[in-house]
Figure 1 (cartoon, rainbow, N blue to C red):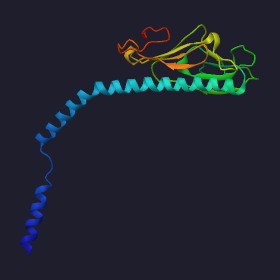
Figure 2 (figure 1 turned 60 degrees about the vertical axis):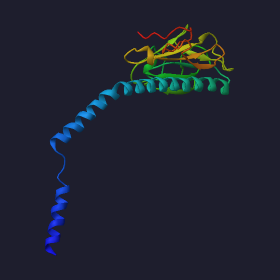
Figure 3 (figure 1 turned 180 degrees about the horizontal axis):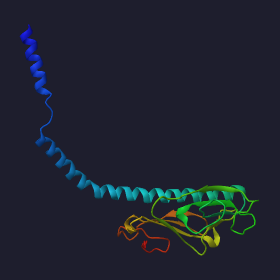
Figure 4 (figure 1 turned 60 degrees about the horizontal axis):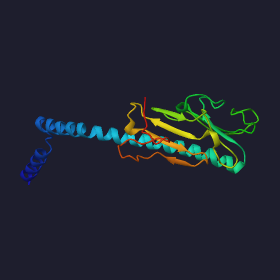
Length: 196
């Protein structure tokens, strides 16, 4: 009976030896090749995802501003802001939405803050193409002379991953499309987005 236990223990030890150095090198080589092949597609997926999420975030903020204007029947301003107290210049630093009852396009102590978000994005850039560096909605939800388009460009300025959100004079929102099928979306002027 002892001899059969001896063979069981010896055969169990035989199966738990581990991997050889050659086997480990082969596995590491295959893993490195697969990672090298997958890196470009991972970057593309990540860049497209960031572009889409930035435009969705902007769309949500624009809808919030427009809905607040209609629901409260008062002018609402959406502008870039770093501190949440005043309009600034850089959209990626933050966004301020407030009721603008005196139509001066600045948040005063008597006006209601609707929303403040800072920073808007961690990397990349956002440009607002319009007559003024703000977007305002009337109590009817019209954007009037502040219509324009937001253009998002990734950190590497690759226009293939750029995106745009277009706001019409009536206050309607639409996302940029690739109407000419060249892989680059067009902005509100029907021209390819250019990232500088």
